[in-house]
Image 1: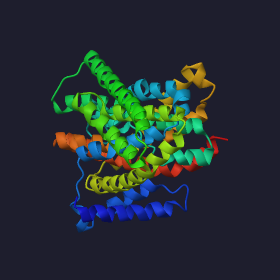
Image 2: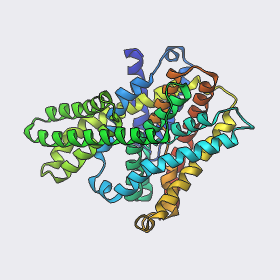
Image 3: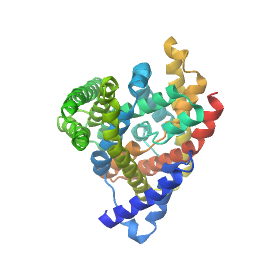
Image 4: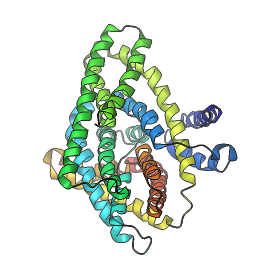
Length: 396
């Protein structure tokens, strides 16, 4: 992607976000992705390429860090149990059930292996609510549901990568993974990322007290967001969880600081602009990148996969919340439905799709990529448009 192409994409993003200021429920990601698909057919933009490394190392650290440090500390404390459960055990159950359902129903539509079905399921389990959280808060006025949706999304990204990596390794034949080795790797990668994030988030929270210049505080936050991510990846643990927990730790520390507003104003001025710019570029690039994979004859099955992903996510969330009395009293089937619907697919799913694209060139891989891209696009369009009316109808 050239500099001039990036500037034009940012301009398009600016126009879309400006329109959004006048319409509270305007589905910005949907519009940007659709515009991106249209841009692919313009010769000037058809050559634009985005790799999985660009999404993973450039876009994700900033987006994850911004969401994490802005996430209310009280919201995490109140809902830590359900967030952690859904983002770990819940996501493993979802991959197993969704993969099994995809394989069982694939016969009349496409030829796909059980491992390929599990791979699609692992691609579609990470959630990316983006602008949905603010819509839930404004339409339903329910902070708890919004906190669970956002908190689960931040943490399940890290879980998804571990599950996907194990399945992708078996799919490409690069490694064989047993149940015990998978659980061992999962715990090592996850807990290692969490520990690094907590440690460096705490260190920055203390160091920032010695830095009274706002510009230097912002510089330090950039180092924290990208530094923890790359350090964690370099030693073989989850960079996603490291960045997320660095941001969450910062949120906890700022909540107890006397100069909390000063700190947050310093960071918000930079990170909110960075977040909007990166989101504009990312969703336009998703559209451009997805366009060439969307011309295939498996759209009906992609719709079925999307419906299955919604239904199974709802079953897992409803069963999880009703299993424990503490959650049962606060999260009914109504809230479970809204949490399920709000789990849009987005940037992490696209990163996983592009990882398959770079690792394998087989016909099975092409089918998995097309089905996954189509399901992600359907998710963005249908779920984004449905969040506001569903919030108003379910949460009274």
